[in-house]
Image 1 (cartoon, helix red, strand yellow):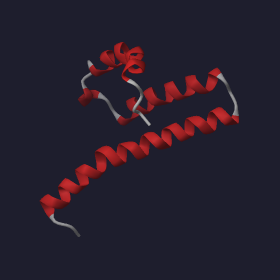
Image 2 (cartoon, one colour):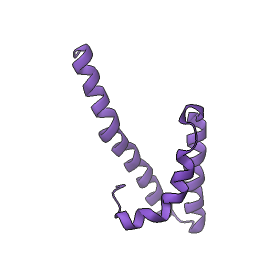
Image 3 (spheres, helix red, strand yellow):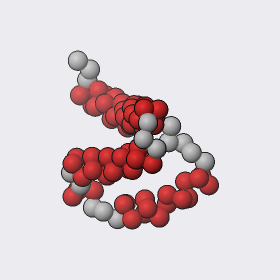
Image 4 (spheres, one colour):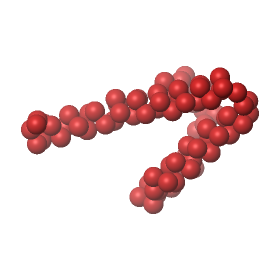
Length: 86
C-alpha cells in the first residue's frame, strides 16, 4: 500500500523531484522496467532469501493491483460512459 505517512515520504522527495523532471513522453516501457527492476534487484541483493523474494513479488503485485484499481478502472468507467457498455 503506497499510503505511507507524509513524514516518511520526505526521504524520497528529492529523488522523485528529479524523476519528475524527465519528459514522460520520452520514457519507454523498457525504461520504466529498468527503473523498477533496479530498485527491486537492489532490495533483494541487500538480503538474498526466499522470504525477501516473496516480499518483493508481493510488493510488485500490490503496485499492479493498486494502479489498476485507482487509475485504470476510473478510466475504463469513463470510457463506458462515453462509448456505452458492451
